[in-house]
Length: 182
Image (cartoon, rainbow, N blue to C red):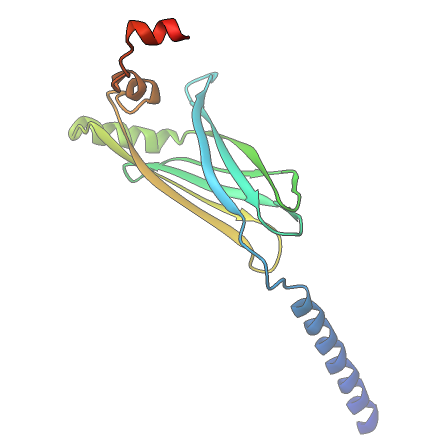
């Protein structure tokens, strides 16, 4: 190969790389907003055997003018610093432009982390336990993973249930005149 041919080949390759790079930059939407992801539910499922199963609901809002496909989800639920639930999910629907939907993840508890948590609770009982939910949602594109981290606490004595809060709240008083008006 001569010097002139090598130089022409290099120029063509450089031009192709430039065109590919220009196309990639053109596909980046300057108005892109990261989809909003919130933990919408967490409940125990009936399980067979000794390992409890859980259903985790994630509510996802797509505020963009383009749809996206959720390739996969990696998530962890920790209680008192112990990763009691870890899992992955895939095969999710396409999230259309300007839409929202809830996806469900099913996970099994980590037996050893659960035992360590119980041992910690026996050694130092707490009425209130801290939890943390972390997830990484892979949308497939260049660096467009969505990370979610939510934390909070719950009471072991059950006083954190919504129906207990409703029952403990004062009810408005009604007079006999109010009842006759209805």
